[in-house]
Length: 400
Image 1 (cartoon, rainbow, N blue to C red):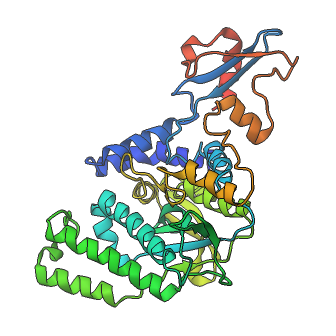
Image 2: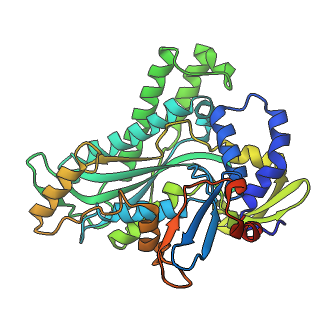
Image 3: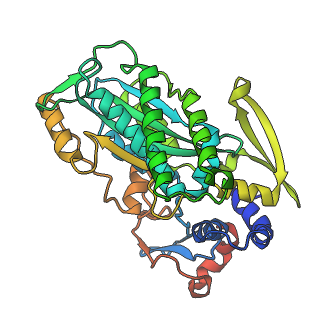
């Protein structure tokens, strides 16, 4: 195994050229992601340089790629997202975790039509929850909903599903805030599953009838009779959303969801071994009681398994609805806090600069010299090695 802290970057640098030869028509977004991962924190993107204006102490760090699918540089963004979302949650009400999955028979259709069918997945999940919550039998109000798309299983298989954090209280049409009186999750699972299935398959049929589906991976479905049999088969399956335990406190709710918002298909920590030809990684087999297992695959196959989870350009993995919808979030939160006689927290993290974020997250002031406590002057981001001042040359080998 390589000696760096970024084994996934090393896997791409070793095996991606071979993979690309076998897949020359690879989508541009996947090419961009692979290039970013290979160059992240290597110095190829330049360096962040700071010099103390009092004692001249130098500091240098290789620039991160900041690609949303890179597993080497997402931690600060994940923590920032968590801090921002915590300002949007309401104290002393329950939050629930729901997971919406779809039958694996739809996988090839989704791989061929990712933007359409993943967006449809979001749409049907949100419409299902909102329509049931508006029923006075269950809540009679519009809850706050945060939905996060997850496309992978622990073994890097293609397994699209959506994690939802939903509040146990919401705003009524009359502008009042009500909480659920049910113990545990307040929506009936069977009704929720049936409604979700009906909405998704109904919209899927419309796309087919309009000729808006790419059937290149499922040519047999071009036959109308086989398509109808395929849809009938999907209607017969049980689409059962998975209800997890009630979140114990609002902070725990967002901390849990943040892990899905910014983490990618596999973390560096799960890579166990890299040879000249193969990669071995650890995973949990939930079908076998969550046992920890190990999977060894060819390096080029690992690249393909990782890249199948790259989302289309501009596609948002996280979406908000209910009283947390982007159009009315600020207004709704102020109203809810006013009704509950509580203070509406200010989101002070949204426009934080990187130095302020690091100070808030880790208590480390990168603007203060660690040697003399003087002020550090930051040079322009991404300076190439050829432009670095002489005092940094000895540090180059230690920062990548």
